[in-house]
Image (cartoon, rainbow, N blue to C red):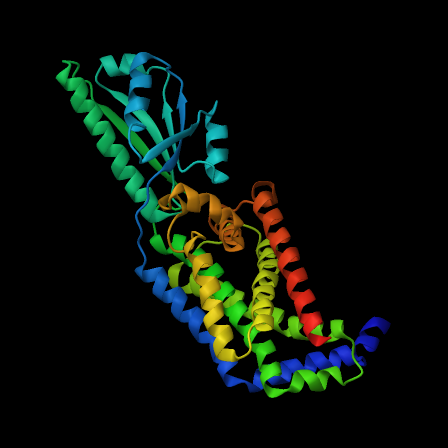
Length: 373
């Protein structure tokens, strides 16, 4: 209790109140926090529909006979499916699909050769349905490949058709918006967080109030914290707004932990705010900071997997996207919302996000403090 009394009587709290009142009086900023996220979520959720290739394939070949190996070669003889692993059982296969290491899993039963001779062979195909468009294409390609394989068998007088049993995981209805809306959540947080934080800082420079703050009996870190804290709470409101639109308009499922989602989303806010503060320290006007933010944010969006799957990119950009914090955040959001996974699966992405947040925040704080000095 004593801590809160001291906080409310401190110069830091006075600065925070000043920032909050300044933000609330800025109608343009309030509109920026509400209108663009809503429009972007609705637009991308209804409109986008990309193509993909190089899907990650896992195969369990219980039969391990010449016919099953021939079928696997047929499936992987193009640039649609790339054989990445051979799990030992269904549990391991499902685990790898859940972790995002595989997009498609194929199970060939032990009696494949016998049923092939009896013209009743079946294989099981599991497809990650989080990306509805990719899942639909994967099913179509798999069906075409098996039909071609059947025709080839018939030319050799075998006449033994194979029928795949396809199961879509996490998105049985192949709803495209379930893939796009989580991606747009990350996109919105990046764009709005960067712009709002940059404009907030650059406005102080334009109006000359930054110099007035330096004359007040406050330290540099108090000025910095007062800038960051109100933005964090405002952008958390954007997170809840985006999540509400996803649930109410697109019936987006929420299968994971809400607390984990909120904590990791708040962590990602530091990335966006840090980028915005860095841009403000290298820009001399609001117009310049807006143009620079688009120059930085567009590559982040394009290589993040928000609006087009990572698998559709050239290999070089797939590797380059690992240096994109937005990619890791979108993987986290889709994993929590659609798959219901936790830190045991997402820990690498969380670790990358923590590293990006610490590095970018340290750089932006250093530049901001040097400017204050």
